[in-house]
Image 1 (spheres, rainbow, N blue to C red):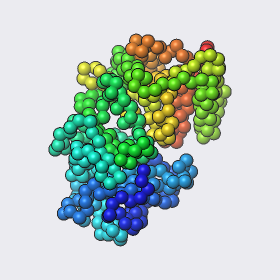
Image 2 (cartoon, rainbow, N blue to C red):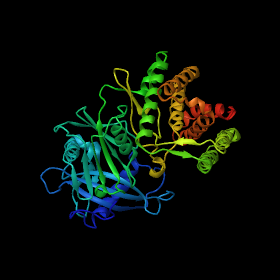
Image 3 (cartoon, one colour):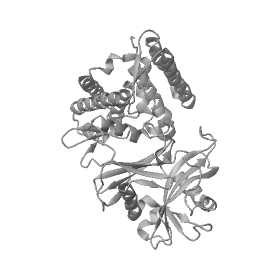
Image 4 (cartoon, rainbow, N blue to C red):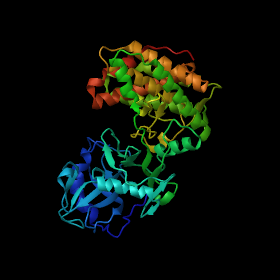
Length: 460
């Protein structure tokens, strides 16, 4: 990413004049990853006028800003965030909730700054930029097919780590708020799957990025078909639980869909074999995360020996002649990352991986059983979120999902019990840490899995 301002209207005074407003507004955004730590500074990476500010109507500024905070792995430079700021002389009442503040001095003195994606006119302009590919300052817009004009935008409220806009119920644009150098898997993997002919994942229609297509270009946003009428897998599972309805047919079909995606990814992108050194690194990472979580959540301490045994079992099976197969995977698969169409077909979405992890780690080939473990944990979560708890429902879904996966891939995840247990354990440890920090009332959900996994024995 360029580290310099990119337009004539980006004098040195621009960011200092915005800092007081951003200092107050940015930490309150739900996609801001640095909550709980003070903001100590800002640095302007680039600024682009997507809509010039000297027109009679609103202007739209695209900013990439680094935010310095203590305790971050990126503390030397700071996390980079993508901001789309609307600029008006006066903010109309219908945009009052999008207000960031009024600039007291500098190049935008007297202007009102607000969240640009909340303004239908500015959101429509972003789609227009995607309709006409090419460079614009440090940004580059690309598309694979023609896009109709005049589609009405609306903001989706469900996103957490990013922002999403739906255009006319035809397309959905995901705007990545936290930006990393390199291709985002949520563009890279769906493009590869589309080339491989896999229809389980909506194919990217357009995208925009920094760097004018250079290898280190950062993905900023991806436009994909909006699967109108599809239902969220998590909500479908909760509805089935609430109605006392079996969910094994859906789980089995979802297992087949997952296997089809994995097979297409293995065909489209390189695969690797994990030998002894790679397996030892894998186990070391899991053990390190367990130790950190146990220090933060004392309730884990009694179960640490049993949980560590799950990881050591993988080291034992990987120390001989056996090699684990690794490939590109989803990386954060759960029921909420799936959609079922009205005809019953499942789609898999959101290939970004766990946003808190470094991009290089998210793009690293991994055993496909990692995704399977994530989905198995999701069935447990659904069952535990219902009262009374229905563990038998979850177990039936877990078995059906693995059966469907085996039918489509020829490989049953249950045939690798040590690896499956290790990844499910690693996921449950992560869940304990997350719930303890953010949703203490949910802590019993992963702790039930912790007790089960710590007592479980696995024969290599």
